Length: 262
Ligand code: COA
Image (cartoon, rainbow, N blue to C red):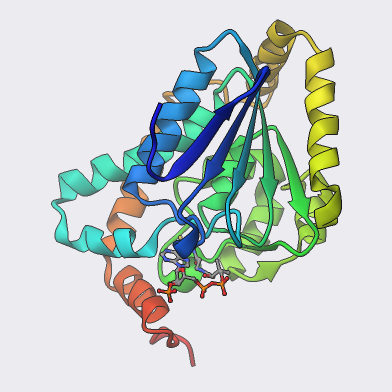
């Protein structure tokens, strides 16, 4: 399969997917959202794939949603805007409901929507210097579509602190919140990834898929059609065209403070 925004490599039982929009720190635009969803659907359907490893090429894992594309939503119809927001929610669901073991390696930065990806995955390995943030409130929007996955992973108290403040936090803090599993130096990333792949190769792939299902069931997140997903799409669709959202994103590109900052 040929992709423009990601690179995909199939090994024996393992698939590597690399985000590849390096100039914008792998920010998620419509094409990348589409390609990632398509590749996860495809890998999920393959019997020869047992583990999917996702990482980012270049300086950072992922800078979250592409703000140029989000800002441009103001020029779209309300219906188009909602349909588009649903695609983002569908991406997180495709990863969360995937039957394969999903490992994510993060480095550099993991911001906004990137945290939806890691919350939807199974194992997250973070390079020690990675910067994390749920920066949405600082942009005049909310972490809407990622919130079901993040809250399921780290709980409401941690989500309140991180999502309401929008502050930066370190990889060690991310581990203490349960957002990442292990924090390592850059030199140990590959060995740690191999270690987790090895754990999954020792487990029955059917049992892994069933165990993922079990964990979704006991945590009450086993319904991929839960109306909450649509509601979060509606929220982000309205927020990104709102006065606050447009001002926040404009301020980011103009490298200035948003108007609400004293
Ligand atoms: N959407 C679109 N473009 C983005 C982007 C995003 N989310 N994040 C970064 N970029 C662009 C920058 O505008 C910049 O473009 P330029 O070279 O034309 O000026 C380029 O990517 C590099 O960004 P820069 O900030 O210079 O890189 P950095 O390595 O110093 O910092 C980040 C990386 C990710 C920490 C920083 O870019 C950042 O905080 N981005 C905003 C992320 C965000 O708030 N996302 C939430 C979306 S809901």
